[in-house]
Length: 292
Image 1 (cartoon, helix red, strand yellow):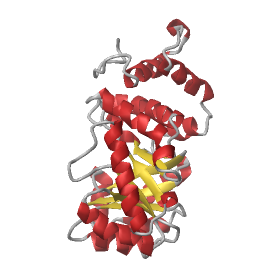
Image 2 (spheres, one colour):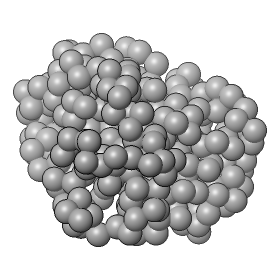
Image 3 (cartoon, helix red, strand yellow):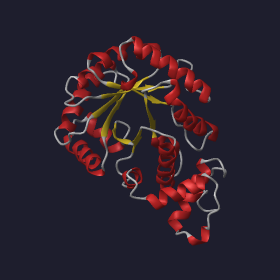
């Protein structure tokens, strides 16, 4: 599974300020963390950046490339900023992301072809996010068709079915997983990607790593190609490269609702089992699910 570091984000209290004030050190320190953690890409998220994006993105690309040779994912809704960054990327870039909103299709799709980039296709239309797996499939077919018309092949498209917080509707998480299993049939050659941390948004900070880790195991089991994840969570690469085989197997047992002798498990293992049951819909979510 391809891991994309999410941490260089304008919404970060420290790195966001570093971007705005053009402070290289904090940005480069995080890029080094991502590379050392075993990430495969670094996402550079500058947000909408309507006014200064075309200046910020190339500065950010150059700043990161001075200390890391990982390929970059350029993350903004500003097409001028995307193009300014693409011109400086030393390796093939990933554009994050192209939704079905007309202005995004019009301005970003040509850049994918012009710069031989890859793209994340976000399954978000003018009507908002999809409600179920059927709508995700319809949006995927529509987006891939429009990308193909613009000269972008399926092999260069990474589709994001949009993960939603566990604190919301559990059925949306299930439809996301169902979509991943259907993707090879509806869009052959396309890759899949999910923003891992979305599932733990709005949950207490100490609980987020368990949700993110278990969700990654679920996504990998469903055939996911890539996740955008926290490079500072050192457990994620270990779970990805199967250095935590026993833990992964335990999570699978919990997801399959197999009988597990809870008394034989460590306190940490019990937390993973409980988290798996919550994410699988076998137990109701609450901020105190690990305490029960």
